[in-house]
Length: 413
Ligand SMILES: NC(=O)c1ccc[n+]([C@@H]2O[C@H](COP(=O)([O-])OP(=O)(O)OC[C@H]3O[C@@H](n4cnc5c(N)ncnc54)[C@H](O)[C@@H]3O)[C@@H](O)[C@H]2O)c1
Image (cartoon, rainbow, N blue to C red; front, top):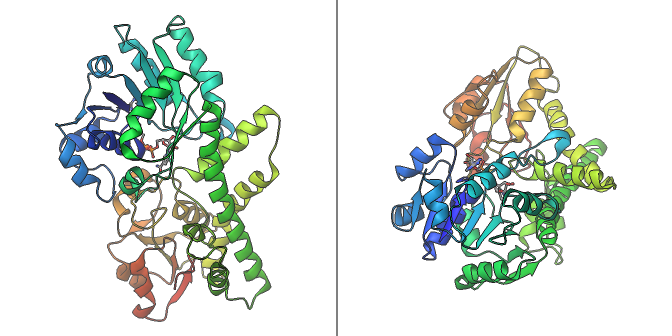
């Protein structure tokens, strides 16, 4: 029996994943609207396949509950999949995680052994230096609680296939009994399980995300060098790079390609959290520092290209608002930063369209003076210049609308 705190991309996938394997799973969330949507059998975000899995498991193996005490009483394993957003100085804010740990411990009324597992991304040493001491102090040193780290590597838009077909499962845990319980939990999946220390588990997740961010910032810097020198077919150059047999056919090439900079919930906050954690421990990483700076500067450079030689009364058309195609996630989306740069440059008329994220963008950023339109065609008709900011396939057809200037920020045309 498992309880999952946090029913976002990671938590819902985890909860439905374990339910699909036949475990009984309780889902807990503090967001009333999210629970209402889930209880109605709907998804609170765009994610392929998950509606079907939700329908198959809701009310059978998966229960969205407000009764934390009953859920915890019935569970041997408690998962934390809550957000870990930017905190002060870019470090990870752990308040949601500790609130969920508090709810768990406050709800326990027996002396069964339980494993508290963090799946949220937390900086290396957090389990050893913060969570274990916290749980120990709060429970008076009880031996009934063990703490583990189990990082998540799924990609939004591929949550379900990444759960079922994970490359590896990492269990960061020093407690033998807890480790055995988690190995048994995942055993039916037949996926390699690597047991490591909690700090190693936490580090592996950042190793992965900071490498991806580094590849993206490297590609963007190279594209800027090429644009500065001039006469270089940037997209073609990268495609030819990908033909190298040392890269060819490897999925990683999608990260070795220029664009608008990395965005979304994870890479921006995780690069900053890793930098802050290392600096707090006494080492200021220089590559990571510049990876972040390159990404932070990218929207300004892109905005400059979009409005180059443009009259301030012109209308700028933004195509794409989500941080990547096939997603409606607009958290830390490059479109937001690019739009802000264009506004800062003195342009007041901005129109935009996204095939999936129109509503979510308007909901999350209600103060942004952007007129959201219903199609790429409407944006084309209203704007003097267009910028492709998210690489949705349908934008490949926009040049057929006419001969207005299109800035292909994704190098996709
Ligand atoms: N989104 C991804 O692609 C991804 C991939 C791997 C790891 N992660 C990590 O997983 C974690 C969750 O990410 P996400 O994208 O699923 O976030 P999310 O914002 O989609 O979901 C987090 C959920 O936690 C809920 N919550 C907050 N406090 C709570 C509490 N005390 N009790 C119960 N629920 C609570 C929120 O209401 C929200 O529904 C983060 O640490 C993130 O870095 C995310």
